[in-house]
Length: 170
View 1: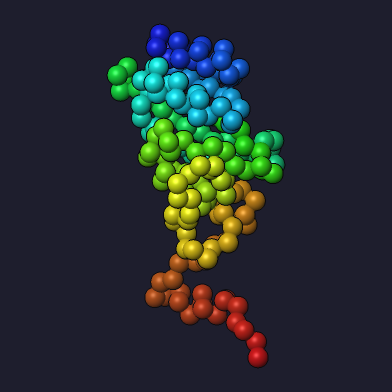
View 2 (view 1 turned 135 degrees about the vertical axis):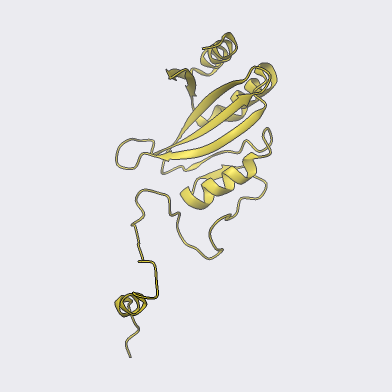
């Protein structure tokens, strides 16, 4: 671990009681979701982590509470360093603060997370569906959503697939 990342991790650990873990030379800081804006601002302004390269969600359905963890990946071009942030989000309170004010490219990441997982981002400038149609109900990447598979239609199986579809009865 570089001195730069070590200093950043120690600062966040002391100030926000973050858990620090390391795996294959990658540092991850886990802390309460209410601190996400403060943590990102410190990392951006004081440690030059000026690029948000990814923001995604892990769904721990049936294994762990809080159910979700939002994962942020920040990059420092100046030091060629990466750091990961994880904030737990409970299922019954599936919302957190938006980091769009600090990292404008988070706009699309957060819209995708809202669309596919149903986690709301407070303070987001335009939180609406990104990938799914307007009228779609639910959030399909949650692990409790049943898998629906429809066989791909080809010229040789078109009639078989069509016969298996439910029809309205008179």
